[in-house]
Image (cartoon, rainbow, N blue to C red; front, side, top):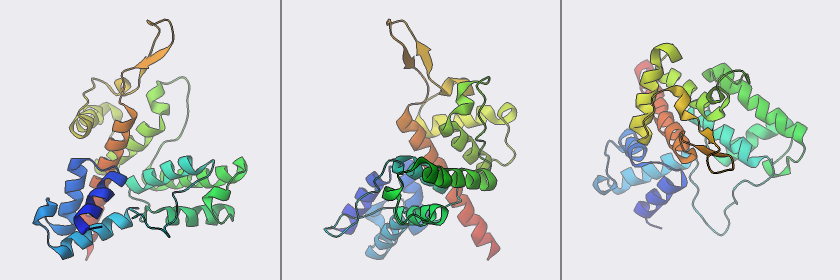
Length: 236
């Protein structure tokens, strides 16, 4: 596979939208277009994507994580990556983390709910401690505040805008949602779909689509990593 082909496979595999992809290109190589890069710059970009979890297919390559609890663990791991607290997005790094928490060698062997909870809760505590994610649940408040995707995205926003509050910075958050996903909302509540019984059966309408939540968190994650990179360079 050529370097150009590998870059575009990585872009798709990592779920990067065009703006996020170009931001990574500029951060790593100083150029926004792969056509303008030389071979060395393209190889550096591929290495960065590998660091983010990109895996090329080969006969001897390991399959994607399997197991009853793998999807939940992977989702939290990528969320922690997008919050800037996980430095290695790869499945191998997640497997090592789970082993430290449970003593179990691989995620696919985590079959008992108690073992899974150890790893899941350890990840959540880490995200709460280091990134301020609010996992508290309250059925009396609006459902958006019990939505894990909003919890993570709002914590990301507060890393970009320290001290942000819903009252003071909610509109700025919604403007960023529009910028990164193309969806416009009037209030934070509108991010959550509402039940609709007009068709005789309950359905949910409106809200930010699942794919766009992923796009939003990935794009915010790239901004956080750029910000962290600038802070590290400033300390040198």
